[in-house]
Amino acid sequence: MSDHEFTSPETHSVRGYLFVFVALIAGTVLTVWASYVHFPSPEINIAVALAIACTKAFLVAAYFMHLISERKMIYLVLGFTALFFAALMGLTVWSLQPNSLVHIQHVP
Amino acid sequence: MDFPYIVEPRRDTGLYNAKLGIWLFLASEVMLFGALFSAYVLLRVGAEPGLWPHGWLNIPIGTANTLVLITSSITTVMAWVSCKMRRFGRFRFFHALTILLAMTFVGIKSYEYHDKFTHFEITLANGKFADGHVVERSADFDPAKKTGAVTIHGYEVNDEADLMDMRRPEARTIRRTEITIPAADIKLMERYGPWHHSYLAIYFTLTALHAFHVICGAVVIGYLWGPGARMWRTDPERFTNRIEISGLFWHFVDLVWIFLFPVLYLL
Image (cartoon, rainbow over all chains, first blue to last red; front, side):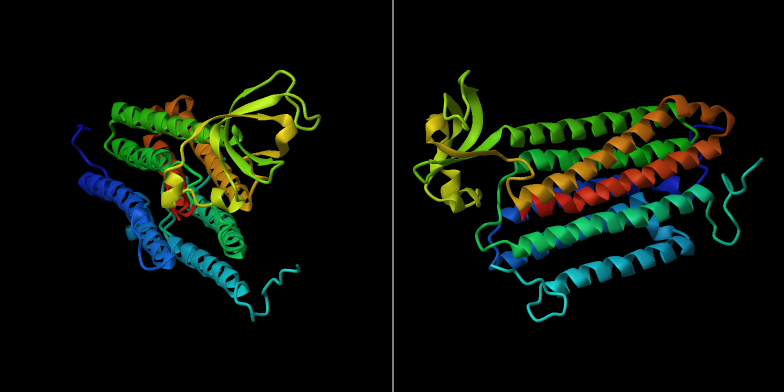
């Protein structure tokens, strides 16, 4: 088999992988820069940092982990994972509401 | 006994065994780290106003480690592509780089841990606070017995709250000098370990668990680079599948760090 012979369609996308790599580096620099910017409220800083992190995570999952062209069974597994993860975070946020059923009262 | 679907995928799922297995494992990992992120949110929101630290970690070092891990992700992908292209020499080159980058990441993390464990907050008898890295201790230094003295490279503040936000403009102008403190003047001396603050507790828990994953991933990749590479000669397809599986785990480790870095270092 010659060195230039490809055995899988994924191997055609080396340029794509390099593009994702550059985007991840740029995203990291952007995250650090954004952390020094004084937005009107700290919540905006958090939202910006998490939005960049989510974009970077999408790039890694979609392209490096090939989730963009994966089998249905994998999507099913990850769908359940996303559901349980959302429930976990939902419970976390719910517990922070002072009037919620699961709020933890601090005893002085 | 031959196990089916080790190399060829099942017709109904389109997956070989190991691929389904690693994704199920990664799903459980999402919940493990998710639980710790949830703990982080609860600790942070539950902290008294002004008493959640900012700027306790070195951002350039954290950024460098992020870049190291991202670079290791591309070398992992390229190692797998090299296997697909039947270029074993290139595979070894890229995975050697991955292992080196993993060791670099762990080395930098160790340096950061060392920096924290040699960093002290000292509550003084006069109600002030000294903060810095220990430079020297006298031979008879013992804060419990009130003997000897310790020299730190740091500074003094009047209020403990002044030690919390090290990113505020005034904190950046603080001049660090060598301060010698007699043990008799020390009320409490505490390292920046996990017990010092709930921020450090969750920082060490999350980063140590992550570093453990990096080490485990590096051991697996090292095995496939070394003795495990023998399979290339007998069953290259199966070997390539193994590289894909170890790569999926490695990318997950990178993905977790993508969230850890801003959460712990920047916000």
